[in-house]
Image (cartoon, rainbow, N blue to C red; front, side, top):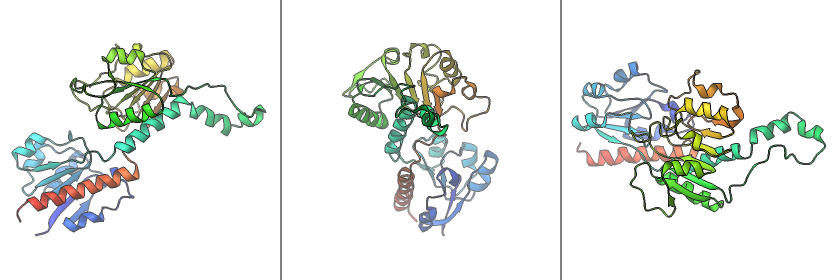
Length: 315
């Protein structure tokens, strides 16, 4: 009997990704998006379910008698009740490491946009202000170099380590804060969080969302940031208290670049959408992981997970 494979949120993978490669494993049904109310009906007869962010609960899995494998199209596995899956004999596989280069690149893209005031300078040219100035250059919004600056990294996992290498190549002095408290063997200075926040010119977050990191950056420590410091979150939404950050961005000249928010997509009443000093903030819609190459690697990882599962499972 052919395996029934269901993809719950193909739109998150991008329309340019060729998912037909999955047909070698069985009959594939893909849905662009899936709501909570639609999930059970769509997975009930599936042998293999592929989900990026659609939540799969114990109650749902209990009603899926032939479900054997859940492939998470991501690294994070918090959208599946893993304990329940194990109890029900359902294998859950994720894909790790596929987006490291993409996230590192996007981190620097956001940094350069803020550091060099690129929105401002683009407007200077597009509005013809440069044309009528009569000057060959414009130094009305000075910017600094990365070289010689202090870069603090929160979360020194695989991505954090790659950020450290690139930052060092630019001449930055790197230090880090271990969110787990266990990572102390890196060739960089390890610092307590408050010291890192108060001494760094650039701070980038590359940590998972856990009980220890939720609300880690908030009204008690945001005031520690240096004037004109740049805070970047490429980890998970919820690590920064967004209301507290919005207040601090309006209170003084600091900058923030965020690719992740606590609730995505951003809600209209999010305080960050209402700040007065909009030039101090850049938000991108959770795209750091989405380079073409990263999504191709992700699909390759899903294919490999299915292949290995089927090889290890008796027919």
